[in-house]
Length: 210
Image (cartoon, rainbow, N blue to C red; front, side, top):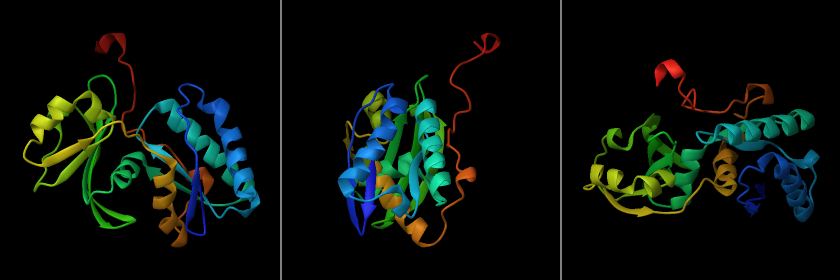
């Protein structure tokens, strides 16, 4: 959870497990209380649009929509993969999130400015051995996909990645950073238009597909 006020970011983190829906509104309330502002003073709301856990994405989108509807303010959906790239701080970042079922959510970015990224490889769902090609070196890999499939990804990108950062997860702090220029340009969307970016359409195979 994060709040950006006049360039300063107030944020809090909690690994909630399966308790997102039980904790999120109280965390919003606590953060606003700590900052000394009210919901009515917000100019917009950002949320991690995905990819990621289906349930987590639905909760994030639904809460953002509900609060934004109530305050009549715009919403900005931010890629969780781009938020992870921003967290790393390197100019070239490869992001891989464990998508289960032997697959990863993958993307690659190059930094243009502190808040602007060029998409080198657009977000996709793939197996670790079928990730897209990269050019050049000095790339940094991050995300739970590298934690789970480090051997496969390191072998695939042995001539391109100089290091991997373990234990990183998307954070609200980077999500609000990426959302700010969108809101400043007036490109936030109406809450009714906010949708999660699942990439994968389903998480289980039908009996006939097994």
